[in-house]
Image (cartoon, rainbow, N blue to C red; front, side, top):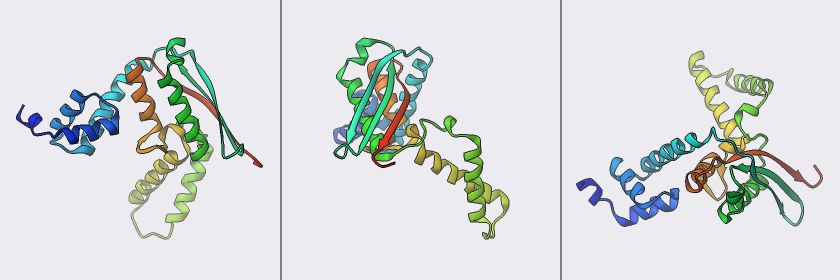
Length: 201
């Protein structure tokens, strides 16, 4: 109890603005982590993800196809984002989520939705490139393999939409942004597909 009382309102406010979580959840997370903001964010994300995971099995057949045109008609994005009911699809929050993701796609130019969509031959080619880069490094093979895995993780974060840091708030990735809306709207939300057009490409 004492720990909770020592958490300043300013710290709780900061955590709320970073995560969108409720006041009590933020205060508890800060108390659990001794006032460590980063650890509190991680704790809330894990809890948010747990909530989202419970809803992940539910069918999402409603939603919308959202279009976004950027840079004076030089970049265009279409995304299909699904939810469970037409009611949620029409809410300003859901439409704002669709807009934010479409704007992110325009700016960040992802190649895939998630890592499962990356073809095995592409992954093999990336690993081959990393091995060549490390060939002259005098380190044990086990260390090199760890470095390769780290580089591969970075590659997924660069090219997979759900893993990319959100352009409006790089402390969250797109998956965390969607999970926050799942928790807020109470429905499963699935980003099904996207296409990005750039003039002259």
